[in-house]
Image (cartoon, rainbow, N blue to C red; front, side, top):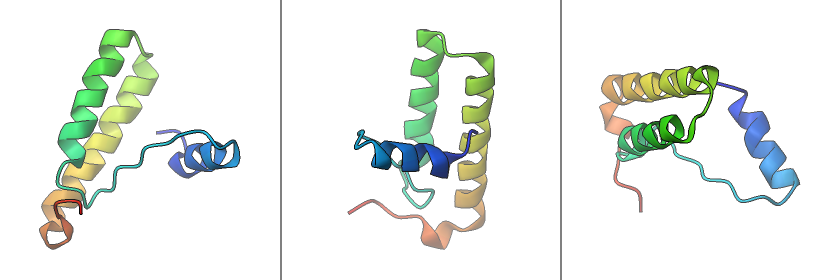
Length: 74
């Protein structure tokens, strides 16, 4: 996916709202899958959709490999 740090930095620099989902969040994969579906419905590019799927796959792998870090957000 496009450099996620750069996107967040641009939002912070411009005082634009941003939403961050950590891989440690038990809701992360489901939330991102829902976003991906909305992005499909809204007509986002194949490149964007493919990049989102890569991030989802990365989060899923992280959560599978490191379950001790996964938690309900507080």
